[in-house]
Length: 211
Image (spheres, rainbow, N blue to C red):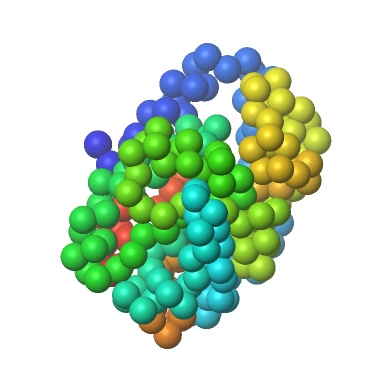
């Protein structure tokens, strides 16, 4: 089963057990994003990716400059370890790490979660690629990928036990939209997948084909 089908199956199963009001609030959140220019204004294929230096789960800094010395970079954003769709996507990416390496490329994930939380996710999902923390969503914001949760959705998340203050170390209620990039050694973006719907992610086989 490909990642897209896995995500759809999870979404369908979750919908069966979710109160109608909660479903409506979550769908309204996606619709509100779709009605903005967030995709239109986001950094995408053909643009150049900005430099960054971010800490990994152990607090060690990793820069784009260093990563590109090895070849192309596959970079994906995820919301947090509390997001089941993010976990499915990370596991699916882990499955293609050998193929990414065969292309002399490096996979890295970016999240607003604190390094303590990224270490937990790395161990839980048995990931052997770097997860970097972008404090306060600064990298995603520079790419035009961040959005503020509507108040009713933030309240619903809290009811579900999702504590963004604990997860990110701030109370901004901001998250990155789902986005995956392939960055060439000249920092030009050769592939981008960007969507307002957190239930959708880049298909791993599409990433390999783009490499």
